[in-house]
Length: 197
Image 1 (cartoon, rainbow, N blue to C red):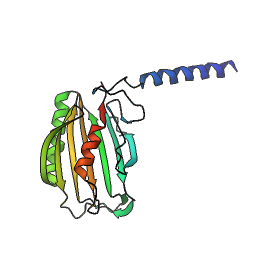
Image 2: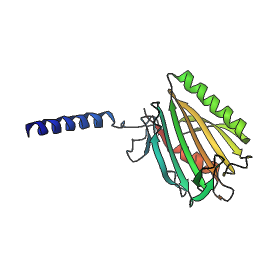
Image 3: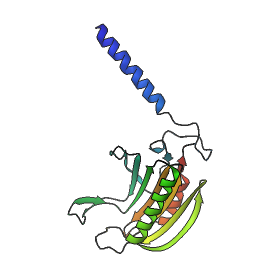
Image 4: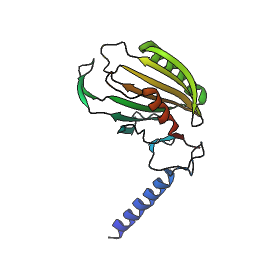
């Protein structure tokens, strides 16, 4: 019985130590009081719900032993789709993807961001590009159309930034039938992204 109580005490102490390590900052870098209800991507940033009919679909760390975090929100009803690999997947009217990847230093994060932008320019038909500051963070944005017949999405808009040693990408991809204004929705979403101080 004493051994069980000792083990329980050790477990509780470990849980308390872990919960202390995972506490949120008092406020975000933009000065906003930190809200524990935001969708967290590691300790890098917290994202408000995007609204506009989007609901959280996934939120996890990529289990590769690397410092990578990912979340996705979807709008509309899912439909079945067979991708180019022959896999059956579900696609939505629109999806927002948020990715944060950590690197050894800011220079590597910057290099990775540039590679992401170059890859998107090679993959899609970019119709517009611009820079914009949202909630104190500067982003490079690309509006694009999908020319591939194997992509279920018709168009989208992406935003890229570097925060400290993290490269961050936010993307809204939508099907042809989506009637929302993707640029405005993504910009509103970026206004709700809060980086840890």
